[in-house]
Length: 370
Image (cartoon, rainbow, N blue to C red; front, side):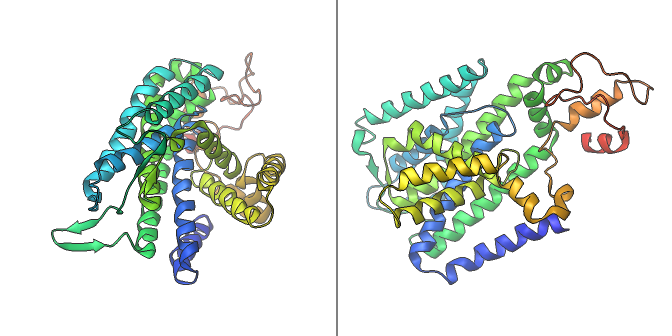
């Protein structure tokens, strides 16, 4: 029960926050939540898939440009169809890039995604229809209307904040369902040991491509709301600098936690806000603080959670935060009747999916597998 206590309290605080802070901070936290959605989307492929992507800002920016190009010049666009359009555009770009980039591994995958991101950056930078290097304006936020009835006036910061908060909660629920599903276990299995995942019959390429497309679509949600909030899109939204910044958010928040990158986004954006008001050399100070965080908390906020709540460590662990339970349970079932078989070559090493001397608990493993 304590596992759900902290998220419930945080959600209650998020709901109460806009009623007790000035409008500036309502808009600030709206931006932070949007960046949290983007960081969580990247974490699906980085933390759970083991794939470091440097082109997620491209999916973020494509959604923003989709909204800008679909919006009338002086009238608000309808959220009902522009949001699906923007998400579909980001997902389509992710499908094309993923189908090509996922044929590579390691540093080559990083470089290929970086190259695609830069290609899209220069495409919008040099395109007249998208405003070129000057970008494009969105004069009115999208509207939520039913006939002639305005359901939500997104021009009001309070209404906009709650729409973004609802989108954030939906993304967290979706990602939690994904990583705890058989699909999520297969994705973690491919991350932990690709050869054994293939030997067990997992279609690794399809699993990774599906995760990459889902991740790109969620990044599109963030890009849509970011463009709507600021009323402006520019090629810099697709640049690798933003992708690298979001990757830092993932590292700060924790790679094996669904909501960890959200905390990383809040920490990094809040740190920037404080340092900008403190010193003109805030970039240098920010870099030093980030280095300290990474050194002191190598697993992000998960380490901090263990320090604050040591009694609930076992309960607080995510079911997909360690090696894949699918591979682990299949490994135990393949061992035969021997309760403690001798370790084979290569087993029992740190980071391996099989642990030769681990105690048997077929009932638990089978339950997680199901």
